[in-house]
Length: 212
Image (spheres, rainbow, N blue to C red):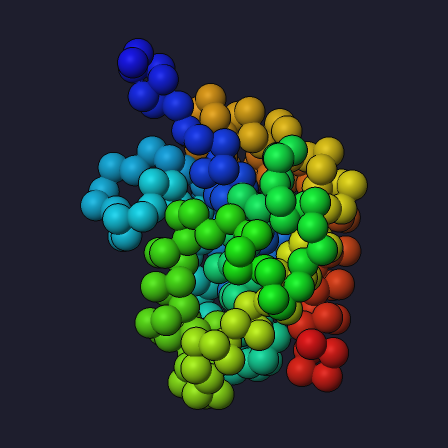
């Protein structure tokens, strides 16, 4: 096998990170400051299942932002953590998740959970808003938390099949495959500020305690 073949990133891995990157881009500056998507991992990996990372660091007033709107902030963190699975499931042309109606009885079998163990470890540690809400504040079991996951996957699917997303994905995919890295500016070119702001406001509207 050539070095080029060995270095080739599988398509689903690119789509997984692009999924995270889209949510990081849309909510940039809210809970986290979006830095980059990268497969150029130089430091020790955080999880053995991870080959790529979407790097977004907490904003300066992170805890105050969360406390100001705990429910919505927690669910937005959940969108971010689950968006890799959604990207791997809804981007590309051969995914069962696109061909089938998503339901609570089938979502775990048709979504692409590859590479998501690190994401779920973060949720289960409950040291970020989403996991904290599920397991510390609400005290849900893992089975009960699946109900919340499923609702977020439904929202992510509706977002990720939007025409604007479909148009922007190919350029991001090709650049990530080639360079193993994407910067916020790449997402800004793919999805302009007006679209990102519209989606952000839509998500804030949907992820309230009354509407979720």
